[in-house]
Amino acid sequence: MSCNYADGLSPYENKGVLGVPEKFDIEEKVDEKCTMLAEWIKNSKHVVVHTGAGISTSAGIPDFRGPNGVWTLEKQGKKPNINISFNDAIPTKTHMALKYLVEKNYVQYIISQNIDGLHLKTGIPRTHLAELHGNMFIGQCNTCNSQFVRDCATMTVGKKCLEEDCKRSVIRGRVCRGKLHDTILDWEHNLPEDDIEILADLNICLGTTLQIVPSGNLPLRGKKYGGKVVIVNLQPTKHDRKADLIINCFADVVLSKVMKKLSLEIPDYSPHFDPTKDHLPCTVVEWNIRQSDKRKIKNQYEKLCKDYKKRKLEEKLFYGVKKPKQYRKGTKMIKRESFIKNEIKEESEIVIIDLTEEEDDIFIE
Image 1 (spheres, rainbow, N blue to C red):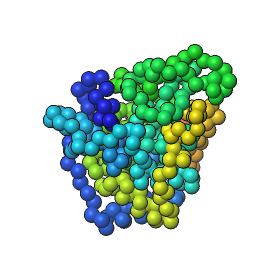
Image 2: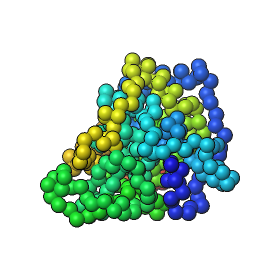
Image 3: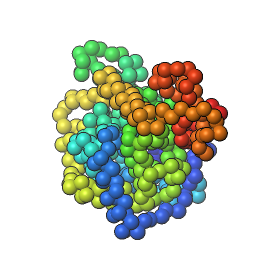
Image 4: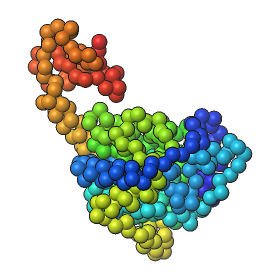
């Protein structure tokens, strides 16, 4: 059962703020905000969606910090009323909508904190999905690090041995003597580095309070490069004040409205595209990030940063000043070496920019 995942984690006291009351925008406001979100999606070059436990509650999998979340009720000595098996759960409207938005090139990447495997079950390619905390349906070899899709959810968490041989020989014809382990992170584990170097000009957060660090801070990385942040959640989050748009509504409702405004239909879930289903005997599905995909992500990251810096330099940075008293309020002076490096020819030149919270650590008084 899905609650067993939380029971399998190591004891940990600091689980964040629990049980905050939910709030809902009125229907007219939701529709207005969904119109805005649809326009932003259409006009953005690189959209990344960050998903949390809130998008899976309609599939019967409880969240953690909601009024009826696993950890909220745990504090009261209770268990959630909904608790479906990971094997029986199927993707929600939100999961299927995101998969279709990826297919139509409206969304370039999905970064998920969920371990339930519902994104995987939609049939989305590995090249468009990062699962930061692991996946109940993935086994990883402890020797060659290859990952493979399993046809049933693991019974363990915390990167424990599954007592299954590595399946690399089936895929590549080369024998590996390693054993498969589950990919579910416990509290002390680090995030997978291959899955976090993602930057976007539009970050959409669905069903997450963004409390877990560092995954909860990833949507903000694009802010200092001109990116927007949208939060869709029923509870307030720690980053609400930095968001460009907040929609307090169910993710399924928001995605249904956005898809309609984009003139797209949400496809139904089909087991035919679900790699966790055993379609053929001895079928092995590899679930690795290829080196070419890593380079593509890195190049996109660097290009977005470079394009933004170039645009800002052209727009506002080349304003030389002679005396500090001429500076506008809310700006700080910086030297060439600490920010734009080779963009200014003379060492003595200075520039001014409007100070933002994210940039504060690179400025000098």
